[in-house]
Amino acid sequence: MRLAPRSKPAPLKSEQIILFRVGGALFAISSSSVQEVKSVDSLAGAAAEIKNSGIKKVRHVLERENQSLFVVNGAMHFALPLTPGTLVFILYETRTALLVDGIEKMTSMTHLQALPSAFSGAERLWYRGLTALDQTVVPVVSPDGFLTADELFLLDAAVAEKSAMQSAANDLSTQGAPAK
Amino acid sequence: MTSAAQLEIPSGLQQDLQSVVLLRLGDRRFAIAANQISELVAPSRIFRFPHRTPNVEGVILRRGRIVPVCEVAERLLGKKILDRRFYLIALRRYESQSEWVALPVTGECELINAEITPPGEHDAPHVSGWISHDGNVVEVLNVAALTTPQSPVAEARS
Image (cartoon, rainbow over all chains, first blue to last red; front, top):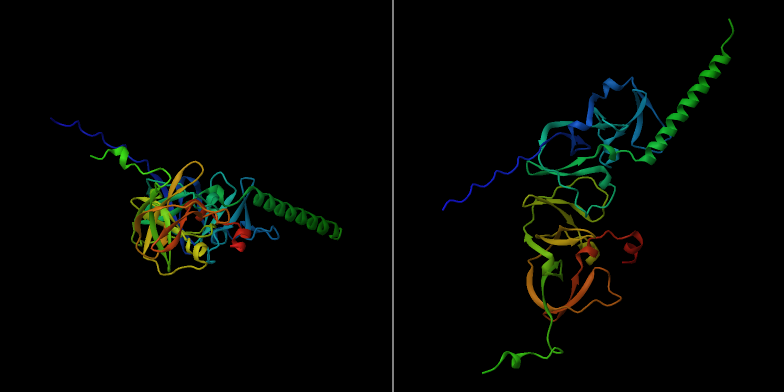
C-alpha cells in the first residue's frame, strides 16, 4: 500500500528588512516602513535645532511636505553608547526620522516571533517582535515606537514656541529698521 | 489471596506525592513542579538587545523558538550568580497563555516525588509550597510569581 503524498508546506511569506546598527547593536526594520535613507551630511542645511522640549533624544526637526519630522537619536532612544550617526531613515506614516550608525545589509525574514511576554517594559512599544537570522536573534523595530503621543505633543509645543519667538524677533527687527 | 480493597490505604494516611524537579542555585536547592518543566539545556549563546524589563537578561534560541532568560538568583538568594551551568526551561503562565522561560541554574537537576506542603500566609508570592528532601526543607517555586518584575516597594522590602 502506498501512502498518499504529503502535501507540500505552504511557502513562508517573507518580508524585506533592513539590518542596521545603532550604538553598536543590531536591529531590523521592515523596508516598507522606510520612505527614504539620507546621509546626515545631506540634511545639514535642512534640519533645524530644537531645544527645551524635554525630549533629549530629539535635537533636530525637519520640515517635509508641511509636516515636522523629528530626528530621533537611536542610541539615546535605546539607551546605548552614543555613536556618531551617519544615516537618517525617514519613516513612512510617522513623524519620525531615525538617526542610525549605518546599514549592515538588506535581507528578508520569514518568521517574526512576538516579543515574549516576559518582556514587560517600554520595549513592548519599541519592537514588533524578534526574528532569528543566521543563528542570531534580532529585534524588529516598530516605526511607531520611537515617539509617544506625549513626546510628540511636547515636541510640537517646542517647535511652535520656537516659531513664535522667531516671528517676534523678525517683527522687532522690521520695526527697528531705519526708515529710508 | 489479597484483594485490592484490602490493600487500600486509609485516606488519612495516603500521601499525596507529586513530581518535582530539584534545582540548584549557588549552594541552595529549590523545586519546581515537574509539569511546569520542559527540559534542562546546556548553556547556549544568549542574545541581548535593549529593553527595560528588570531581571530579563536576553533570549536564547531553542529548537527554533526564542526563549527569554529570566534571572531569578537575585530574588531568591539576594545576589547574582555568575557560575551557571544549565538553563531550566520552564512553563510560565500568563493570564491568557503560557510561554517558555529559561531559568539559569548552577547544577544538575533531579526529578523526585515528594509531598508538597501548601505555603503559609507569610510566605513570599514566589513560594507555592514546601517539600522535605534529604533532611532539608526546600521551597517549591511559583514560576509566574518569580518572573514577574517586582515593584520598587516590594523589592525594597525583600
